[in-house]
Length: 167
Image (cartoon, rainbow, N blue to C red):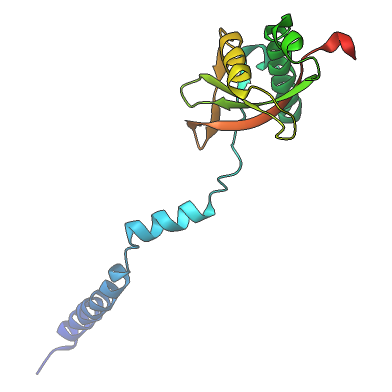
């Protein structure tokens, strides 16, 4: 016969043993697939927006995001107008008062420019492109846009007034 003291010791041990066997099921949860997690995260990212827009160091002191964006675009437009203010474009193409310039800020903090000309007017696009590329050099340091802590390429089109004096 089993004594009552032995029985009192055996019951808790059996109870703990049975609980430990069932608790192992809690540790058997499914580990999510790495590719599935990656695809889910990639779908959640808005690829059309950046966390931080590109900026010049002269705009670093501006705290408000909207004002910082405005500072960047105004400063860049002003620099482009200054560099294109020579009479070359206005003499060759007097009817051309505003030109849209596609600006690319690359992840390595360099700028690239491409004129976006209206197809209805006849211009020597190669000549205008050449003038713009030779004039638009030596810009101040630009900080690229940031997406999730990583520098990324951004593009936008700026309307640039070529002959401010005519207005």
